[in-house]
Length: 109
Image (tube, rainbow, N blue to C red; front, side, top):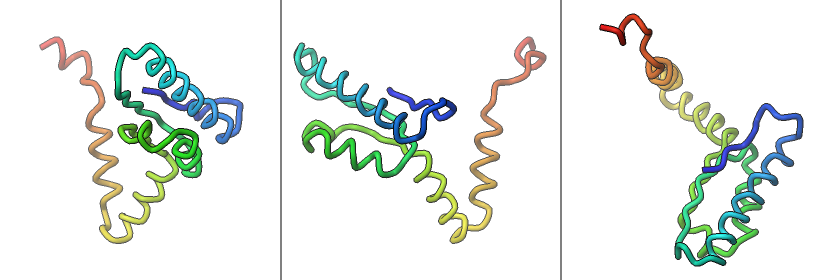
């Protein structure tokens, strides 16, 4: 799993480029050592255009099992879905907010 540093000093394109290069290095290392035939890479990218860059950098067989999450695409998708289904963003926010750790007083009981 490779995560992008969205709070770094670099621009989003540089951060995504660095993340893509890290994924390529991991894939090439595992392919050279033949430890695994198929490697699944889970990565987070900041710009939607970076997904295309990653898919074009490797052939389709190498990227077939990869999972890519793009923060900007997810935000825009949620915004579009909230127009069709009012209250969806509130529901998702409440689900995320309720999944935090329990207070220490409750854990000690």
